[in-house]
Image 1 (cartoon, rainbow, N blue to C red):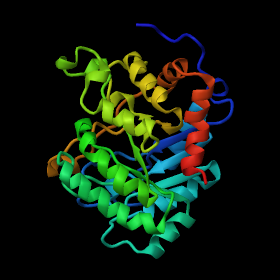
Image 2 (image 1 turned 30 degrees about the vertical axis):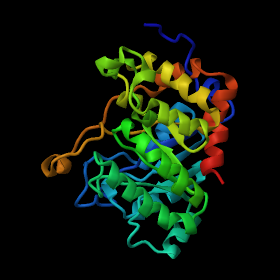
Image 3 (image 1 turned 180 degrees about the vertical axis):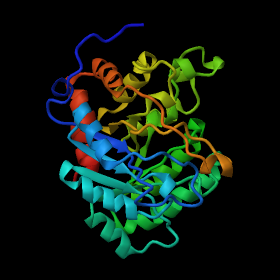
Length: 315
């Protein structure tokens, strides 16, 4: 394994600033979790994130509403206000059946620039038809009232993208919604590929369809949470082919997020599991960032870390 030898310094990695487009804040003592949550995380406070932000060297961030808070964005708006001076926008979770246009406009005025779709609510994590329903319902609500907002959508079945692609092209993009997927679209690096792929990341289900959407400018992808798609931490060297594939497809559609404080892998939990506090993963974000920086050009790095997130969230 090759170890990246250049010293890790904030000024070296982010000479023009940088965005972390996927992090969370959890403060259950201030804001109670939803009773029907899928996960109970330990506290991860605003101050702890500010310390992390300073250590890494980023200048802006996108606070992603934790699904443990359900569709109540009270906590998100409070955290964004608290982080506001540090250049933070928000991505919320909504109930499309009950939210009003006035509430959406108020969210926008408070720095919210998108939503994420809670597949657990739809019992859709493993059901592509229910995923289509969830996407349609959220697009129907935010399309007319929040043009330009992003809609984040993450699931554990990359093979579903072939069936989702026509709907994205025909319904979501024409509605003015900018679709984002987290965590490498959960395409796997070599260390997590099934045996039939023989170590070739391009042979896994969904690879071609995802790259086609990225190439066409119809899908943003966050290079976030490498531990969800690779077993080779802390440097995740086997992710280089995937990183290069995404950037070669379209460098203007690629973003970076930490996934701080590093919640465990997505899965459908029993009620007992969901209510039991689950610890965070131990991740060396600095070493991962050094690896990532070594695989890309200065122009690609600036696009991923500055210009792309500014265009998507910073307006």
